[in-house]
Image 1 (cartoon, rainbow, N blue to C red):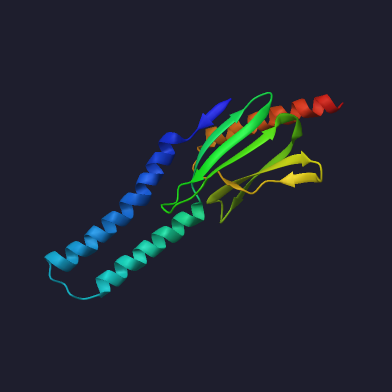
Image 2 (spheres, rainbow, N blue to C red):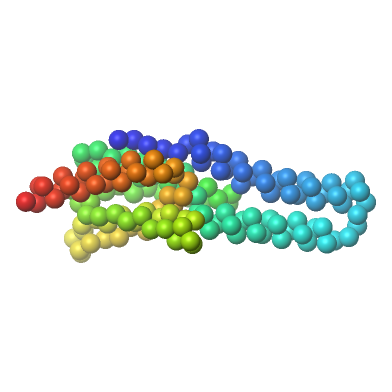
Length: 158
């Protein structure tokens, strides 16, 4: 099974760039065209930008490429923040996959996936992956894939 959120991630990334640009253009237009030399408008534009980036950082949107098969589970992801962020990847052998959790935090505004894998030292928990940019049907497909792998692993144990 393969899944990605290319279209939605592209739209979110565009909004990350477009909204700050529009705020700066509006502030510059007020300052230059209407000869309003009051710095309150600049401060207001700065506050709007700070609030925008604060709200967007709460959501922690990510571009995600998910693939699951009989051999392994792989999730590649990159945070859609306008700042330089690294590409990340998680690859787990299907037989070592033990559990997953999708937690909603910040009053349900942000969804985060946590994966658990059997390792030589016990049960390893991967850092959270931002799932907020995925649609509900995509999340349910991923849950079905995880549940299927867990069921196969459980039947192999018995």
